[in-house]
Length: 411
Image 1 (spheres, rainbow, N blue to C red):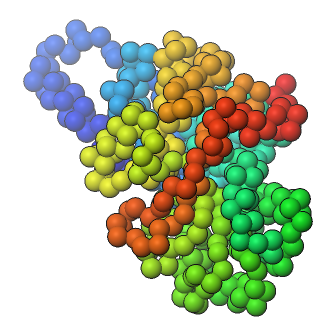
Image 2 (tube, one colour):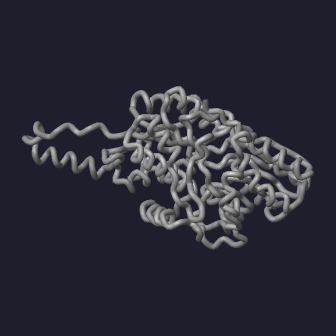
Image 3 (spheres, helix red, strand yellow):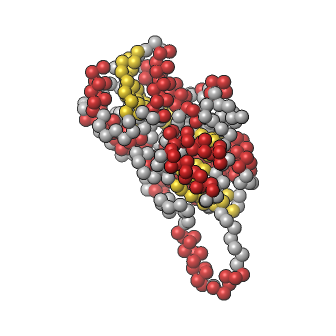
């Protein structure tokens, strides 16, 4: 069953079986013990707006992770409750509703950095474990960190360090086109610092509002500036719109485009004719180095949804898995018991491991450097994997930064 836009998600088959049983044996009902309340997990992801194409996959991956466990945690029935996060204020209100009305024991979500920054503060106030599965703003596991918040996505600062050598390979005259909210502003700040360290020059910069429909004025400014490379910081639908118009104005193939954190849905929306660029991403369904359990996840996703698992589906799945594993390991729904289990969670990931660092609750994940194929023949398969970063898995913790560099003070 695909998650709907209502609150509680109850598999139709189970609901029908339950109704049939009561209808068949009404006299037995007084003798049936009342079922225990299920363990509820909150899902806080946008259902509308420019990020919705990504959150559909995040939610699908999350629900698949629960179904793989037969909708149980600690041997008890479990279910997911999905509420919207249309704005930071509305998201925090829905987080309160999940805890106070739906009685969830933990929450998965945070599709945009602006939402996630508000949500993590609310999680600390409500004393509920919160795993941020998508937002990448550095502050989430940096200066804004707290004991109740964990985060999957690699911070902007780390991804920017990973992609910078690729941008520098084209030259040191950069033009920045970034979103005018937390994610884009973080990229701009980090990229400028790295460019300065490399002795480069910023030849132009623009910050575009969310949901910009027409990038032509920005593109014409870039054409006039003639940079060696364009470093982007646009998210989701805005990135797709920009690349389409970049192609329409004859810019594809003239100036390289480089950006962190590409989503499969972003590039699928661009189409094979306009797609271009070099990017970082956390996971790719066609990566031959994916470990066996992740290949099995990709196969299960394809079978269930009849399309490949986007990177966001994996992000929803792995964060949900970390939470579900930890609740089972804790044998408790007490918030601190879940938090301590999450801090100790660790699973094999090829030549490396997935785990949350105790001092900042950042998941350590090697990133991929990918480039759009010269010729795209499969409507889903757009990328060649160029490298896994860092190339030496032993340097993973170092690449993510030391405790002093991160600035997280949990208290």
